[in-house]
Image 1 (tube, rainbow, N blue to C red):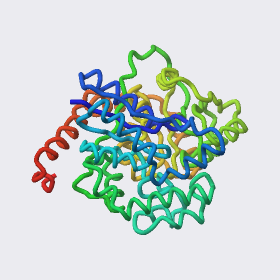
Image 2: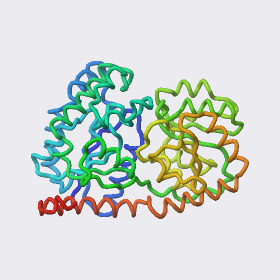
Image 3: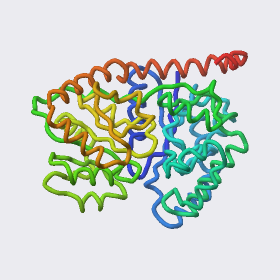
Image 4: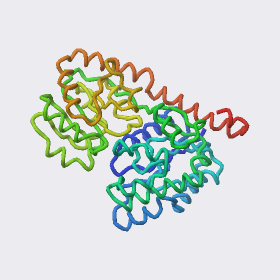
Length: 393
């Protein structure tokens, strides 16, 4: 089997980028002929680049032609799309269709349904785009606080809903959790084409013999990840916290460093694993939908328990009293209370960490992920070879 992965890397590297690299390595390690067609948002440098990119968000002829050339060169049996925004656009699906190659798409976020990406917003509007048009987001400037940028994204979403892109041009969608699958179905995607397959991460390797200490945050420094909640909570917590990552709220983090809070900035992936193997627990204070955070799996692979927001999207991943604890989303007092309580019970945290490692080994290793992914690819090829099976998916 020959598989072509397609991905638009982000300006600030995130979990999706890690998943693509890991799946590429995993497929090759298992003897699957795999190639990567990619672009990088770091190439959007000048104001002119931004304008040209904005003009092609809805449909990019350039990207469609480039992918067509890659398909002709590599001749894949399956094309697996991870992210097309902003440089590739949904136009790449037409390149796949013209070449008659089946498409699998991993739904890392909700951007095909809403410019917010993670259905982030106030409680009244959070899931509004699932039930009606998303033009309401323009007035609220949900994307980069810009009317023009939000309008461009809303145009992309509504145009491709209108022409039936997702119903007609994708053979199989991969949702990362049951709750995410439910949301996509509510948003109009065909239920019989959405398969649940969580992310995976590679094994962390041998653990150093250290006395674990301190809390750790790893992720993009923005509102959606709950940085203000985290920093406010730690004003009432006397326990060391390390913050790893980069993003628009980096200055806010720097302003709140103290004897308890240290900021490490962006660090290499291996260094992140070392920090996870040395910490007592990970904090995930997100306030919006989390699809299936790679950071949690990385923590589990390092035997690190997780204290996270009590979000529906995390219910099947972090189990209270087994692999971690939860607090009310956006409530700094609730987070502080949970942390103050748990740090007085270090042996419980050790138990949670051992459970987390066991959960990882049982379901989120590269071996388990490879089997699930190959089942999806083979099923797509089976249906393509016998269209009569499509209705029985």
